[in-house]
Length: 148
Image: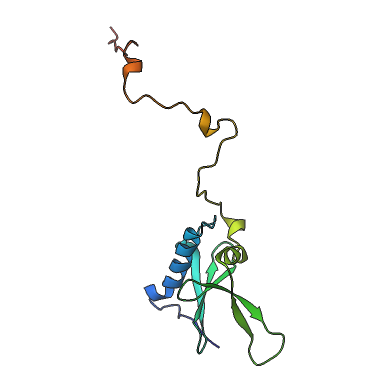
């Protein structure tokens, strides 16, 4: 494993952010209730793994926790080795687990993918609105009067 970190004066390339875009899209598709908002993340580094996909590591600006993903948007978690030649390994995890590990539930509000039902006014008690103005025809209109 080898780490690559962008220089502070490097121009950011779209390729650096595509893994984050892809994991954000997958999170929406799987209806994860915490959005991965791209401008809330900073690129920390990329881990180059020979024979396996590189892992991009992003840090959330408020939780200060990491999100590790490969170029397809597959999230990972890092498992440190207590001994051995390498510092550790990356293991694939589900997107919901990655979002929890990144601390998004602690720093952002969730989103609803379906309208929540109000306990005081269930949807089956709503009256449909009239499609025409017949119900208002017998009511007097508003008359404006100029002050003398």
